[in-house]
Length: 225
Image 1 (tube, rainbow, N blue to C red):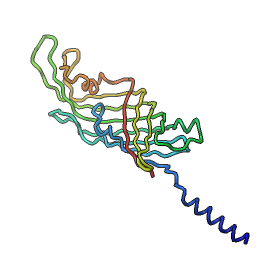
Image 2 (image 1 turned 30 degrees about the vertical axis):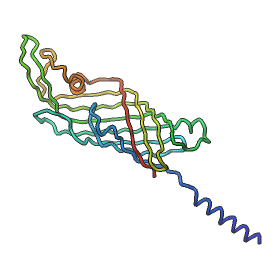
Image 3 (image 1 turned 180 degrees about the vertical axis):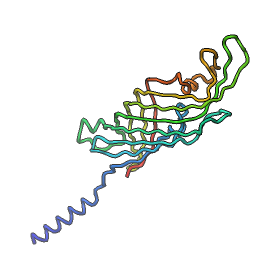
Image 4 (image 1 turned 90 degrees about the vertical axis):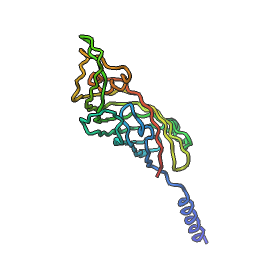
């Protein structure tokens, strides 16, 4: 009788264990905002997150340029580009309380190292400063850009369901940007360019190279498995 009871207990324990939901240690995500990132260049950007333990994970992301937004008439360079980053993150509630279970909202902080490069074409309108010449000239030129740096990341992983997640986040950090122009006739010591698209031009001229503060927003949509 004792043997039968023992067998029944073992069978029951195996059945209960089999009913427990397995932990989803992986997630694949798409960065929706990068699809229309005109500040740098738009990419189809996918990431994979892998849990290291119950409060930390590693997120690796890579993106490829989808299309070019340049309106230049002359093409000097074939438009192309990619972005990649790797991020180690800590889920804050779980770090400070090991008994906290996975909830609908999980705040996290992380450190991200990133690199991106692309090439495109652009144009500008300028006038001659000295002697004063009111004639406006159009200058088409090529642009090669690389940027690398490190960010602090802050975000919230929102569980829409057991499998589907949303992930709004911000990044703050430092980057070094290098810009090389080709076929550029504009000379800042002799010419003055139109201010209509000054911000975009600043991101595409060699004078925009150097070390600078980096800020960004992101929004990922993902699936756990």
